[in-house]
Every structure is written in C-alpha cells, then in structure tokens.
Length: 552
Image (cartoon, rainbow, N blue to C red; front, top):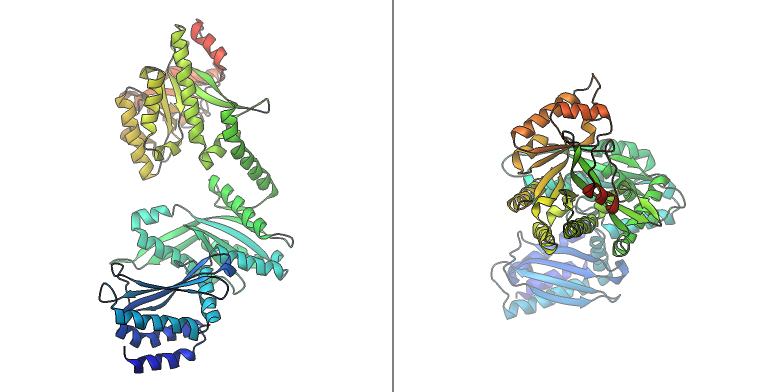
C-alpha cells in the first residue's frame, strides 16, 4: 500500500463530520485512491443499534459501480459505544478475493473510518438509514413512529390526518412489466409524494405496496385528489412505460388526545373498509368502524375454539325439479350456534374469508356432508347430490383436489353424490389453478358448479375456459323478472340456452316468487333453489325430505 496516499486519506478524513450528504459524498471521493490501490469495489456498513429500536441501518460508504456478488467479501465488525454492532463489508472489484497485504490495508482503512470520523457521527448517519426504507427512501415504520411521537410531544396531533394507503392491483405491475418497473414505480410514487408534502409532513413505507402519510388537515383533500390516481411514466427498456397508479386510502382525522396506536389502527381500519367497497376507494374512519373491527377480531379469535366445540352446524337447502316437482339435490350451508343463537353466514363468513380461516370451515362442512351421506346409505336412504361451497382461497392450496378425493374415499362416498361449488376468479394465477382443479374433479366424476354466475368480470370466459358441468344463476338475475323495463329476462333466457347447448346443467338460486318459477319453467330451467320451495333445513328435517314422498 502506498503510504503517501494513505497519509493524505487520513488528513482529509480528519476534517469530515459525516453529518450531511455532502460529507458522505466527500468521504467516497477521498477513499477512491486507496480503493484503487487495495482493489476495493464496494464498502458498506450495517448497524444494529439498540438506541433505534433494534433496527438495522445500512449505508454505502464507497462504490465504483455494480457489485460483483460472486467475489468473496471481507467483513470487519466493531462494537459501538451503546452496545450495538457496526459491521463493514468490503467487496473486491477485480479478483475473487483480497490478498493478505490488501486485507491489512483494509483493516487500517476501516478502523480509521470508524474511529477518526467520530463514532457518534457515523452512528448518526447509520441511524438515519435505520429509519429509512432502502428502496424508496421513504421513512420506514421506525421513522413513522419517531415522527408521530415528536408530533404528539409537540402537542400538534390535532393538526394532522393519518392516511393508510394501498396501491390497487399493484402486483399486476410487477407481473406484466417486471419487478424492476414495479420498484421504479414505487420510487416515483414516493418521490412525487415527497415533492407534494411539506417539511412537517411525511410518507412512510409499511412494506410491499402499503404506505402511511401523516399530513396537515389543510392539505388532505389536495393530496387525496392528486394521489388517488397518479399518472407515472417510467424509463424502463427501449420505450417509456406510462400508466396510472390507483390508490385505496383509509383516512383518520386525529384529535389532541390520540396516541400512535390510534393514528395507525384507525386509518388501517378505514383502509380495510375501503378494500371491501366497490363504490369508493377513499374511506374516512368512524367509530362504527372500530366497533365492527372489534367484532371481527372477536369472531376471528373465537373461530378455532368454536370449530373444535362443534358449534358450527351444517344445514341443507333442497333443490327442486320444477318439471317433476320433487327433490333433485341440495346445497350444504353452515350455521354457527354461538351463545345459543344461530349466527347467519353473512355475519362471519366474510370475516373468515378475509383472514383465511374460511378454508378450515369449508373442509369441515365437506367432511360433515360426506359423513352424513355415508350414514344415509348405511340406513338405506338414497341421498341426492349435495353441493358444497369452497372459497377461492383454496386455489392457493395445490393439495385441495387430493384432500377432497381422500375425504370421499374415507367415507366411501360415490362421486355422483358430490358437487363442488366455486366462485368465479379474475386473477390469472387463480384462473390457472382453478382450471387445473376443475379438470381433476371432472376426471374423477365429481360435479363442479360456478356459483353466483352472471356477477363476475368475464362470465362467458368461465363457460369457455372451465370444464364445469353446472351453472348456478345468481339471485340478482331473477330480481327483476316481470319488470318490463328490465333486460334480465332476455339475459337469463340466453344464458340458459347457451349453457344447454354446451351440455351444462343450469340451476337458479334465490327463487322466491311464483312468477319467477313460472318464467324459469317457460325457458326450460327446471332446477331451482329458494325460499319459495324450502328454507335451509337441519339434518333431521332434511332427512325427512329424503325419505318422504314430498312434492313441491
């Protein structure tokens, strides 16, 4: 190592404070002559500092361009004054590893950087990195907590609003344009927000495509207007990519007494509501939302115990053949007997769907159906085909088809007695998984139906792309039967004709009036389900339908 170069480096280093970006850039410049001598391509330092909530900060001290991950790095670790650890990683630029002489020079270099620049000042630089998201340079969760704490300490909380933001369908940006474009889009979004926000406002990245903005109430509406639909143009590849980043937003207007948790949780709850709404992407928090959120947490926390305690009960709603006026099938529906009260599905199914427990419930219902069918056959009662609903969340489980077939085999249930009900999906990956699942079911003789048919995004594609053998018309298609101004009768008639030409069964659900039944009979849609004929029945009451000679 050239000691003249090293002496010059030390003299320049002594004059640095490392408290500004300009100092950091200067450090990189004065390291370069030594880096060339010692074959250094990249130096970075990571800090685990107890004083910053245990967060890891990483800062690049020197880099001559792209890092060569295949080269063998040299790592040196120092203890900081507060019991933390500063770890330096040095990567060679030309060779796979450093020579012994180069390592000795690097040790001296790192020690001087750590000691002569001032440990506290270096930690200050690293601590800044520890509260900053490395990809977008927004604050991270530690930075957000620090900002809100300072605002509360200053007694200025009531001046602010908290916005929890989710970028809508952002995963499609990554899928269709690539992760590089997705990362760049996140950077552009944050950069645009920083330009818009004042010095006493901030944006933090919470991970993935989720952000929190703490903003003055006076600027709130302008921010929402601009960032609900933000046009961006990315320079990726041979030509620019232009599209609009759409956002869902949950907004909480802070008061003087609000804590960090209240600012975070309240805007997060409002965002959760926004996710479930089709009419708006911006929702302001209300006390009623907190009550509902507490209800949802209660449902989620009680579910597993209630499932083990057999509080969930399977009911059967008969399906009727309009031509023969007799029982032709049934749908298995679940009820929760909670605190001696029957809880309707709409009060718990959407909650379990949101947090994933619905899969366990669906499998419980399916196994119960198989048990009941086995018992009926043992009692010489001829079952009808029973349809069981499965959430689209199951499509992420590659073993679903095997699980269903294994359960049927366990209870010796013939495939002619089972129908699997699925709802239409719009995601490409889910569609591929659904097609594969349907094919396996059909190859094993199990009927598959599409529930809520006519309410999805690409109804005709369902008929075209999936080998389902049953189409279940959604109740909403029947609500306007008899209304001269409605085109629903034309739509239903043509869907029934199309399905029949494709050799698919059609069943209409939610039939509640004689007028609807007569219309369906007239278009040869003879399989129906609804309160006009029967409500969902307990096991024993439905069994009476099986053994009885009841005409509807």
